[in-house]
Image (tube, rainbow, N blue to C red; front, side, top):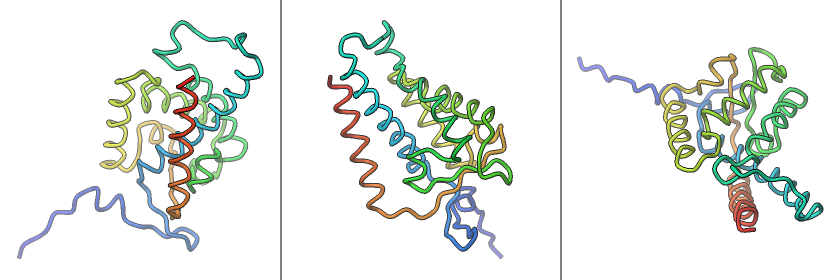
Length: 184
C-alpha cells in the first residue's frame, strides 16, 4: 500500500471555520497588501503635512537609504493594535490579530511586533535588503504558517474571505500613493 506524504503547506493553507466564517491562516500577499495599505494612508498624511509646512518639513540625510516613514509607523501601528485591535489596512482586508484569546494585543507586544516587522519583515525599508527580507518572511510564512515576530509573542493572524474588489482597491491605492509620494 502506497502512502502519500503530506506537504506542510497543504496543512497550513486549509480553510478553517471560526464562528461560522471561512478563514485562512496563511496569506502572505494579503498581509503585505494590508501593511502597505497602512503605509499608503500614512504617506497621504505626510503629504498633507509637507504641503502645509512646505520647505520646513524635517528630513534626514539618510532618508533615501532608510525611509523614516516606515519607522514612524511603528508607534502609530502599535496604538492602533492595542487600542482598536486592528489597523485600517487590516480592517479593510479582513485580517485579524489575536494574542492567545485576546482580540487586541497589549501595547508592549504590539510595539515589539511592529518593530520586528519593520526590522525583519521589510528590512527597515532599505532598497534591496527589503526585498530579501520580505521574500524570506513570505517563504517562512508559507512553510511554517507563522512569522517569527508572531511566534515570539504567541500572536495568531487570521484571514477572513476577502472580496476581489477590496484587493483591487487596496492595490490601486498603494501603487498610486507610493508613485505620488516618491515622485515629489
